Length: 282
Image (tube, rainbow, N blue to C red; front, side, top):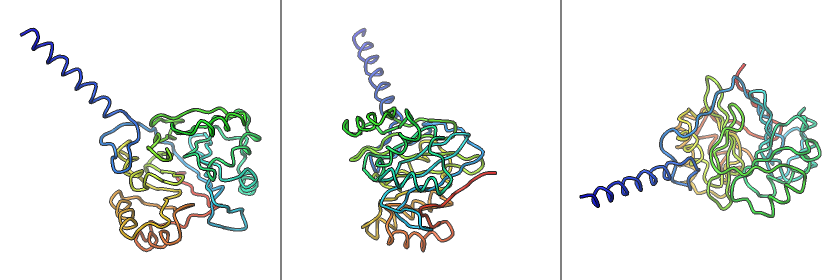
């Protein structure tokens, strides 16, 4: 009897450990979003996004292939990705009235050059700035960032970086990628993506499942160049099912996908491009 009780106790302990491991807050592979509340993100009263770099041109701003979005919320300024080169980031930031020396941190979605190439401009403007990278970055790229005099913080799972501003944590690659989540009071989540390699529909579902907060808007690259008709239908359907109110495609979304989303989403579709300013709240 004693042996039976010990065996039962051990089995129960194993089940508890397994349950904890299964529910730990790390981003899933595509097709496997979490279920249930995982991360509390405190709301901020207002949010301002400025697209500093994007390959969709506007008003004579530099528009090489890449993306960078300046995020201002809760008294904090975060730079999400940095575009492909420092000159573009510096020139566009100056023209758009963004002072790179005032940023509090940088969040890098993934390690491709069109997302990290502008980091030397950050190093010049804000020596020693903190750069959040997803776990799984190549050691070579991480060392290059450190060599610029910047502080590297490896993100292993979902976390609120500042009040109202959180990272999803890394989705499994290749390449490992993270997205940014900002919760705006009275509206819900604004999700900012770099390339959405894991699937934009999976990222949006995950953001909702992670927080149990309505996804109000999504801004960024959707990685839909060359996507099949069925894939585009699935993406649009997911956005409609989640009730996403505003969709701003940028970077690697592609003209064909943009046209399809514009037709399918109607007034929810917004024309994203370099230089656009998006504001929520008072």
